[in-house]
Every structure is written in C-alpha cells, then in structure tokens.
Image (cartoon, rainbow, N blue to C red; front, side, top):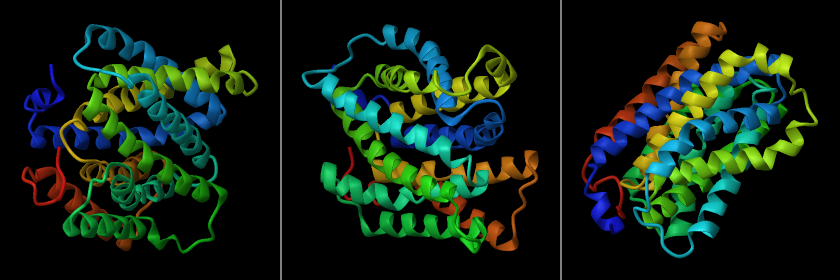
Length: 300
C-alpha cells in the first residue's frame, strides 16, 4: 500500500491525540527515571528498558507485515536507532545530576530545535505561528523550572544535549516513517538496536540479578509504558503530522513530569512554575486541537 494511501487512515486530530497520550505517559514515568538510579546505573537502565520494550513490541512488529518499506529502509532506520540510543543514554545520565522537573523541562528545548532541524533536514518549512508556539513553550518551561536561577549542574548540561539529540531524532523518525511506513517495526528496531549498543557498557556497571529484582517496578513502568507504548504511539502518529507539530505536543511531557515529581518526590512548583505550566498546556492543547494546515507551512 502506498504511503499516501495509508495517511488517509488516520486524521491529524487522532495523530495529535496519540502524541498527547505519549507525552502523558512519558511525564508520569519520568519519576521512575530518577528513582531507578538507586539500584542501577544509567546505561544499565537504558539496556534493560530497551530489552523489555523490544520483547513487548517485536510480536506486533512481526504481524505488521510489509505495509511498505522500499529501498533504503535499513540505512534509514539505522540513523533513527543511533540517535534514539544516544538520546536515551544521555537523558538517563541527566537524571543523576539534576531534578526530574529540571531535566524534563530542559529537554523541552527540543521544541524550538526541532523546527530548525526539520527545515534543514527535510526542507519542512515551519510557519511563523508554529515558531511562536515553540518559543512560548520553551518560555513556559523556563517558568515551570523556576527560571533556572540556581547554578547549572552537569545534569542540566546533559539534558540540553538530550534535547539536541531528540530534536534531530524526531525529524529523522518522521522522515523515516513517512517514507517507509511500518512504525511498529521501526519502534522495535529502535529498542533492540539500543539494547545491543548498550549491552557491553551495561555489563561493566551495576547490573546484577539483585539490582534488577530491586528495580523491577521501575523497569516495568519504563520498559512497557514509557518506552514500548510511548514510542510506538509517537512512531505511529508521526506518519500523519509534521515533526515541528509533534515536538510542540510532546513538550507537554514536562508538565506531567512536574506534576508526578511533586506528588511522588516532593518537588514543589513556585507561582512562576504554575504560570509556566499553564503556558505550556495552552500551547500543547492549541497544537493538539488544530486539524488544519494553519500551524505548518508544509504538511504530510
């Protein structure tokens, strides 16, 4: 089936709803990224969650069939896998040196980087409106994190690097699934490829049967929900919307991460933080409810 024909099977509104659901899952799971470090080192976390996600996703990927792939599928998916693995490792390292709230919100800087990367890589020219929304989202993130008035930590620096990696990854993922389809096969390739890439380093760290058993609740949350379900939702949705649009909606992760961190870890929001959360949610909901072409000058 041609990709153009498959795009008609999902409206942009449904695609946006899937992206918003993914952002909620990631935000609620971000607390586990922090608490699991009491048992496992960052690379071991990425390896184990990737193995779990790959095991969950692979049976569905095998049933997906060959609903388009075409020449160049393997080198294309290899770029996606490499960027995904790099982003996951750096993100997990950021949680070792900063708060859940700050890491999640600094990573949302990718909201602004993504339209630029999409313009350079895919010639996907963003409209002025999507750029304004992206900038407002980052402004809201700064407010939500209290303006980052404290001194920067190595965790903050890793969060910024994560934002760059995930911005480019978002664009490459969109390019790949729009051209080749098979979003579940792409997701499974990401997870299993990341597991293979991180295995040698994970074996040298804190991973053991004892630490794995101690961390099993977080591993289930991160492996099944945050990784398998969350990224499968994004891979499926990005066939029907632009990378810039997806980045704005997924930035809602920071708000849900702050809420879960406040409830479970005692991280508290200032009045500025609540204002920032309102700005982000307004931008996300505006982008998610938009079903026309007014946000993007170039649409799939």
